[in-house]
Length: 263
Image (cartoon, rainbow, N blue to C red; front, side):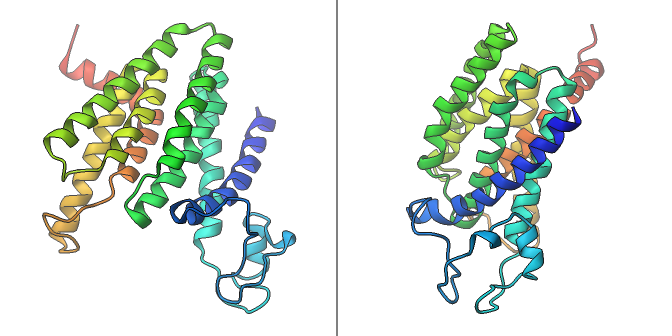
């Protein structure tokens, strides 16, 4: 287990470094491989030795090696956050006996981080990331269900994806100014992943996303940082709710059932 945790931590750092590229380039429709990364201030290419996650930023003291322009702290922050979530998800899946689903959930975490950051920056959840994720997660979850001899989990995932998609589609149909269709397509991904674990986790995750979004929106209005008609990116709250449900969804659902649905 320690080897697996260390491995996922290192993988998270590397993936986090790549996600910084994704977040910057995908909204601009720029290739992820070409051209090579450059300093936006002086235009010099980033040397390979300066691409080490976190370490390079620390050694360079957060500045470009050529022109000393500041490098945003977001870069190491994304790398560390990705590594931390990779480790946390690994430990959680080991706890509930679902390590065969680890590749799917690590992929989901990486997608969640990139989409949340892009949504915060641009107010969009790009199809270029959302749509290809469906077949990838479907394949990885199918492999997990086969390896664990649990076809019911795959059925739950399909039901959860369709139910979440339908719920958000209905919301957009009733209130088209409330959220975008990108949220609808993303809801299917989240619903499938959470339902693969269990239906209670799905219910908690969906509810948590709405609660977090509504609470933040009301706080923004109260502090006059937003108005009643302001549009707040909802993707980050959807993913935050999903992550919360993965870790505490089952205990919360059971506590609710004991308190309000005895017997």
